[in-house]
Image (tube, rainbow, N blue to C red; front, side):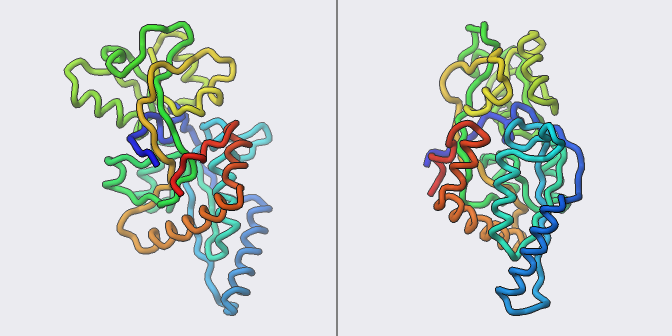
Length: 289
């Protein structure tokens, strides 16, 4: 399994796509599901007083096809539906999905407001120092520079020096750009944003910024009219994982349980089907086994 640092928002910010609004309520279907989970837990343990542990999942609402609000006002997408599938397979837990801006997810994890981040997060050295990642990846990203369709002058990070590059604060893409600037005298002008995908397209096509960085599968999701294109070679690639608090026994227990469920979801083909349904292809094929 290849692992490098990833360039787009770990959420790709999706390209910066992490806008969100708070929501602590679950749907009637989810509440019914939780009731069934509790019953299953009691049945499995033989103890009517068996506890179901509540876990608050943090995600966003501005990442097309990954975590977004659909035309019916429902939170859905690849990461959201995968979390729901994992929830079904872990009767000892009750998942409560909470939405927020992407830039607030890791801080909310650190301050115990949420217990797990589900927003296409990649593991890089900077994050690994501070956070716990589960072991079973659920997607694989290859990152590229993204520019306007008629821009033929940018093909590498060096070509971005002195230019404006849009990215999301706290994203993996931002970290790559920041790392480049640490090593070079001529800096990339990093423009931090928490806007949505449509704004990213307009910012680039209008010339307000020169480029952004994104994962291979994201371009068609945020730019259905094909106003943008990828440029140059892959900048990096990485597996996508869930993020939890480090040095916390309960979080390690949760991580191990999630890994067990993910192995089942991979083995029975559910993961590949979810990826194809939401992302347009199976972007899980290169994930670690």
